[in-house]
Length: 307
Image (cartoon, rainbow, N blue to C red):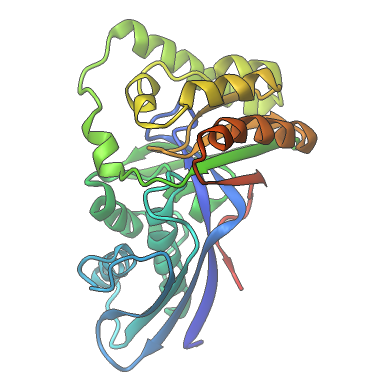
């Protein structure tokens, strides 16, 4: 049995406009690097953190909390130390807490000899997500652990549907360098929605899933609409409407809030279109003088990987 493992835990986009809390996809290249060692010292603790600042106290760190949940279901006489090179900014809207939570439980599961399947790890990783956002949800975690596009049919019990991905689909992500915590962006959402809007949203979600199965980019474009969440959250994101309009005008299939924001995602057919969309999305922040990160990524169909 191995005593240490290094993994890459990728970033992800959740909600995807029409699938609040149920739909997500996994990104390439952007992600956290996590190194976990199994040792004789009992418990779970942080050995080292580089990059963005996150809590080192095991009770406040999502990775430690998630691993602790796993160890309550699979006891081990050993302890685990976790080192994280944090490359996904917390509060960025591309699954920072999900990468750390999922990555840590994946690594510990490897060190224990894989007693749990990837989908089963979601239960433990959601404990970390709940610490970060105040809610149990798996729309970021599922694509990180399983890769590609995923649909969360249920979290109690866990029931995840892996979805196909059209081969030419490319994501463009812009992250204005401000922080928007999930727990705060969830607080502004209404508990009740109109039946009319709910029906429109269900239609868009069903059509989008069909488009993934049939490689129907036109249907995908018509379906990437958010009737429920975007109207409330978009006011928290600088220049959101201008960026969205610019992306659509440059040929994006759709554009919306990535997770709880402030990152904004667009989906395009082909890399050339995705790059043009990226230039258009960046222009409002250049004029505003607001720093940003821009990512152009194919859909990561594998999810977490061992390095």
